Structures are given as C-alpha cells and as structure tokens.
Length: 241
Image (cartoon, rainbow, N blue to C red):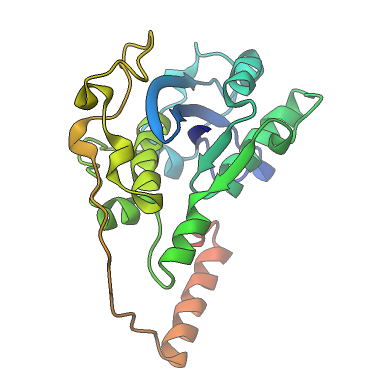
C-alpha cells in the first residue's frame, strides 16, 4: 500500500481571494513505513503574502522570487502522488488550493481525485476524539509526537509530524521503526534522508478515557456569537481545527 502524506503552505486562506500555494511537502510510506522518498518545493506565487500567513510559516515573498511556478512542477508532483492514497489534515483546504492551481494552468484533469485518493485525518480525528481540539498541534500533544524542532509551520516538517500522528492514531508505533532497528535494508533509497523518521519520534499508543465536559446552552451560544464576530472581520482560524 503506497501512501503519501502531504501538506502545503499558502499566501493566505482562500483561493477564491486569489491566494496561491508557496510550498508543497510530501513524504512517501509503503505498507505504513516511511521510505525516505520526498517531494518538496517552494513556489513563486506572483503575489504578496498575507501578513497573518507569513507569521504562521515565516516565508516572505522575497524568498520566493527565484523559485519555480506551480505549472513548472505540476507534472512531477502529480507523478509523485499518482495512484497513491494521499493523507492530508483538513484535506478540503489543501485540495482546494491544489485544484485551483491546476485550473489556473488549464490542466486537462484539475480534480485531485483523478490522480489519487484522499484521506482526511481531521475527519478521522474528529470521529475518534469528538468534542476535543483536533488540530495537528493538538494531536501531536495527544499522541506524544515530538514537535519541538518546529518553530514555524512548514509543509515538509508538518508532513513528517502528520505521518507520525496518523500511524499512532491508526495502528501503533511499530510502523515507525527504522530499517536499522530490524537489521535490514528495507525502505532505503537514494534519498539523503536515508529513509524513515527519527527514532525519538515513535509515538506510543495509549487508551485515553477522558471526561468530556460539554458547555451549557448559554455558553455554547456565547461561544458561537464570538466566532461569528470573528468571521465578520475575516476568516476564523477556529473553523479549521
């Protein structure tokens, strides 16, 4: 089973407002083992980056001036994800941007579903942990995945973290073992990474029995009223958790 864990960084929150992808990060897993094969690129968006977005990922427009445009890497990217199950956290966001880029370049098959299957880990997390925060940061804490070297969001490092979280959520730490741990050469390739994720990243599988305290009707109404005020002034980040 070939799976690709994917993340993107963008100039803002909505392709409908003309925002573009500026970074794509993908890592490959075969039979739930990280192989070391990656697809990673920065992209020139030909537009400014929202201040809020830059605060999240730390990438400035000046840093991207010499990078390729999406259309220049589209074929290579689509070949990398071809026929795989692509694992994304909050897939609607990333898929929406990818399809927007494909439509802008007038690709003959702009729907991601024409190239691969998509698995949304946010939907899985919400089913497993209803009523709790299920952002990637929250899941890293819940499954004790070490995110200490991540100062800002980045497509490749977020893909690595998501791979660890996904494996922990869906089957346990054994899938995170490096080939060196088993004394074999399985999964090695020509990648400088040498295959696999750091051993310290192994996430233990635990059974949690947490008490869920639901808000009162008045508290829920007050919360929703506050979110609505935030939405009126722009995108509400809590809608993406």
